Image (cartoon, rainbow, N blue to C red; front, side, top):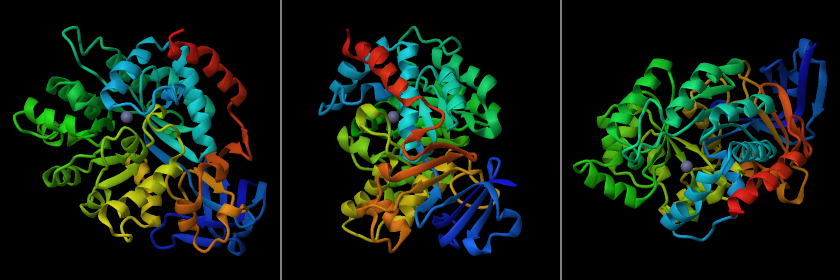
Length: 440
Ligand SMILES: [Zn+2]
């Protein structure tokens, strides 16, 4: 007998040929999806399961991929808002990060994962410190993640071999890369062009090449970053500078991309670089607005990220999905740009591709891992239901998520977390992290 059957659902498959199945069923055995189709076509061997869930017309879709997060930053949610970027970063965020203990970071990670699971995220790409310990929490909570510590090479005291980011990256590779069938991956990471040097880029590139890693980076977030790079690197843009030193010769996941010339976009497309669009963070910090429809048109793989909760202040990816579609329309004065299906692709298949998990997650299809979420459609805000893709993009919120499954394991259902003591997670953040953030 197989493990789980979900039937009578509107299934958003993200399959190009059959994007939506009404009255659909998904059969799950172990970590894998073994059947997707109409409920009345369930093969006899999949007619019974240890658990049969009748969706009663709810939406079943692939779990969301948050391709750019600093999960632990949820301990600073609401701590420093409405400030100019440099003041926010140098006077508020960096001093707190200098004080945060390992326990405070890990309390934030657990709370952030609880929030992601409850709002439909099944996989995230994280860039922060303490990642080998973060990996333990990812392992235990059952979510999927790509973890990295972005190297910052500023000051005379910097030594690549002994720098904390290098040490953590090597430990992640050794202990956690490809853990549990690839549920956890290690990523290489350069924090950004403006916080490091070509020598560091070459060394990180060598690690990425040797271990087959994706490199996670911040890229062209602000105009200041773009303009100052040209002064630092003889007229080269951040994309051109990083390309010159071979950073894009292995797969790269780059967050933001708000300032890109046509030449930059050509390089990104040629090199297969993925851009994690973070619309809420970019708007809140007034960094700029990435030209997503141009990136899509040029063949760049676009995915979505929340960025940290100090600049969002939420890990609800449904906000990014809707905003990605709306900003593409509003900035071009063309409502046909980035339609609902494209916006969903950003958050599912494209995110999976950016994480190196193409063919593993991001679709509801036989042989894919069972990373599945279910959206409650039985609420005033979700009725009537003409087109499940439209409802998922323009009407749904993270709070519509009633079930979240990763590799066949239900981690959140109807307000209950199965792998996290959420009361304790909230208590730990308030007792351990908040006093440090407040400077008490
Ligand atoms: Zn970021």
